[in-house]
Image (cartoon, rainbow, N blue to C red; front, side, top):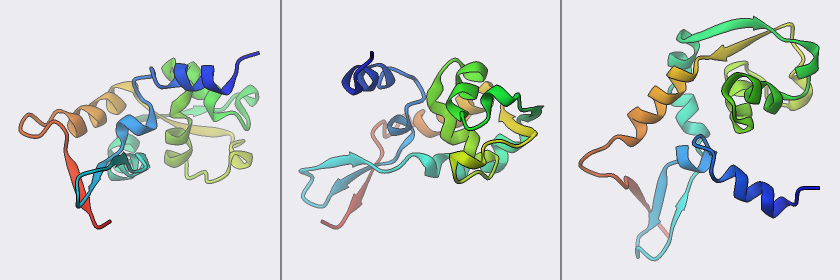
Length: 130
């Protein structure tokens, strides 16, 4: 049986881990930096992802299992939140529709490249009040 620690260590190596898609923030005194939720990146590129997506029929074996569909479509299970967002699903119990919108892997990679290829400022941190 896999432990939570082992799963966390495995997930951190995924190229599309949610923390890697997140904004970086720092406190005014520069002592702390931390990621903010990366879901905002998906929302900023919502229509781009929809424009580069396919509508597929959802096999019943993927009902209530967006992480399984993510693994089947992209090779990683942690793009499940992206599939839920583009399909307007807020609860895993609603992931049982007949058709599902599946953004292309190329559009996801392009979205991430736009975010992180910043030659002048590779660590783009936003200041916040502490």
